[in-house]
Length: 438
Image 1 (tube, one colour):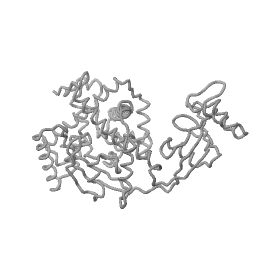
Image 2: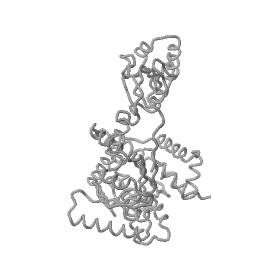
Image 3: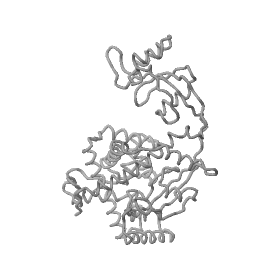
Image 4: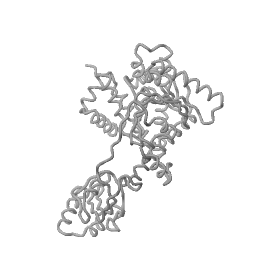
């Protein structure tokens, strides 16, 4: 039984769990032997792209076009698929340069996350993919590429991005204006790429292309089909869908035109450093303010890191349980932290100082928020290890204040700037690479 198109889209939508997702409709693959014998359509430094891979990458967009697919649209979609595969090869090569290796277990973990997001078992996901003619080997390669992208961003791009206090203050003022309701918009995009140094002739050509596209949209042509054929962004093969955004997570130029619009409305062109954008409001939703109280907290902790095992002490969980029992018997939290904690705060008795919303990992913050001053927690597991948390002081904050929202706003700005820098980095990589099309 063939799964529905909606389930197929849902599976690919959740294939990536990071701020910078790339969604692919990949519906077939070749074996290594077949790939070697297949017609080579591009050489990318020391790697190749084959005709079969291009056709596989393009098949979802081609099927979406249906009866409207003609030879011109078919060639445009194949070209877009080839461009996307070239970028995959370049990412993989850069990953090698930076010592990034994605293991099979990491891909397995992402597969399980996809299954959970779709409320399926792993076996159910594999069965659904098989019923929808998705080759498992190629699907796993797409997931691997997404992990590579995430790790490249983490290792190469994020260390270069900074956020100033003034940028945070500006975004706070923007999102706290009277009468401005917090909302998120779900966007589709058609990008006509145009460099910032483009000549007047190139600008006129790009504007003419945008005008033709807008005319087609007004005449009832499918936005998704036009994105599949003409968008210069990798989202084109996805029908142009680029995700949900809050104020501050888009460029200033985009933010000015997309918020407060009706669902289905098309706006643009919008000029950014990438080029000219045509944007469609696919959906919108209000963002409700959290009813939870927000605190500024001074706390201490004892950390036993994952992997801190020994025959004498046992594993990390056993060690933290023993320390918890000693606290219950009246032992000093500060003394135990100094003697046993694996954190750099051990010499200060585990003192973390003051922190506000968003400064600690979510689990740690939630537990700290739930404790009263002078009380310590049960053992708490985070990505760093097992913790015991002692709250020393606690002050309730105005949830709408700059102090309460500062870390959230900072992360929002950081993500936007990281995405912009990654896009530029990827364009530079493409320009410097040896790519020969056959």
